[in-house]
Length: 307
Image 1 (tube, one colour):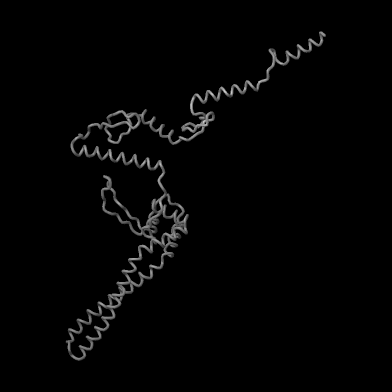
Image 2 (cartoon, rainbow, N blue to C red):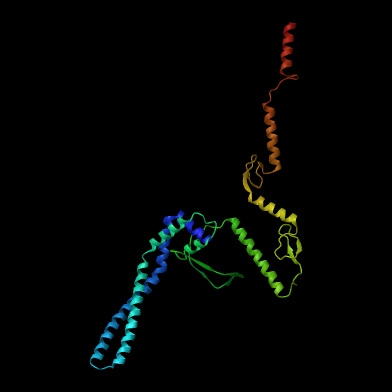
């Protein structure tokens, strides 16, 4: 399903690049095959011409009485059967050589097939029949201790085509490293059970992924010693995903944080910024005498009246 979806999306979204890659890959695959087909075709044509001469000679030998009628019939039947098989093989070889020039047509056919389907969320039987030419499953082998089995999926019209894959993100690389670590640990525990070093049913001694303390579990793939460590671990993972770089509003230093409303790199910068803000507010406040502006106005009015 993933192969069909990737191939169709790439072919439709990158039509020119797709056509170029199909032509290039087809030429590479067909170069040696075309040479071998031409050599085989030339040999068969030469042999067919030789058979025409041989049949002519046995006719002459039979006509002058050098071979008997039974011998003539036997030889003629054998040569004619060989000549008929060569003619069929030559016709097939010529057809194969002609098909080597149909790369662009085959790529266009796959494009039309990809455009025919608008929903690739579900794998259906007609989709398999139309998209898949064949599937080749190779023998399993060991790679870095892991059992690896290669599967080649040949698509209709374009064969086993290799599509460009994007570079894995840091999160994907981290996830792959974690899965590899778990596989290694599981394999080690399986070897212990197989060698008799660990009895079946006996709890496993594991290390908590959060607090790092050892704990026992009946499952060999347990990661945490309890629900609190599990919740704390995933909270920390979510916080790390939110981590961003910020610039301190006080000293201008670049720092890293997982919170959204952080402005300062430390408490000292926060207090310094608060203190500076308070000083600015005091400087902006007008310097009125005690009692306020209204008391001062009333005092001046009274003095004027007394005078």
